[in-house]
Image (cartoon, rainbow, N blue to C red; front, side, top):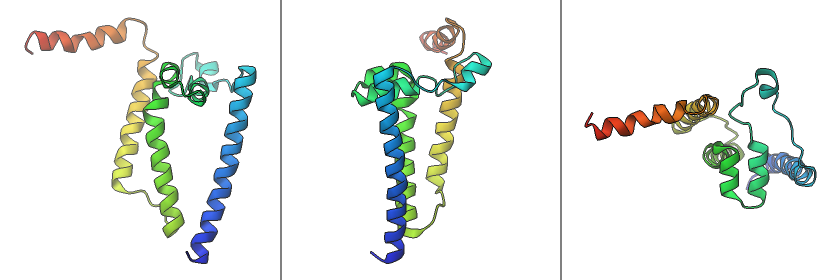
Length: 146
């Protein structure tokens, strides 16, 4: 491994270490106190953002409670793992080549993830019964042969 790659690796590991330390300290704080960072979006607009419940989901994940994490925020076990994988691929590419260029497949995956996140943010704020009635249309149409 040449010195340039080694330097990038050490710099990125330092950043990752700081991020992990902050995350672990925050998780400990949340587990001990039950308090998390309030959602500014929800405080201002009175509706849930796509990330609401993510702290509770992360705490559930620290207890390996995947069902609980899914209950608090569906994105925590769907979109977030994919995002983490893409970020790790990006870090690996940067360390090896010093390039932060995003490939076409990554761009497509990120675009789909953005669409899913926006759709989830809208769907979770629909009044009770609206989503069920909307999703009930498709099964009825299929039964009717449409």
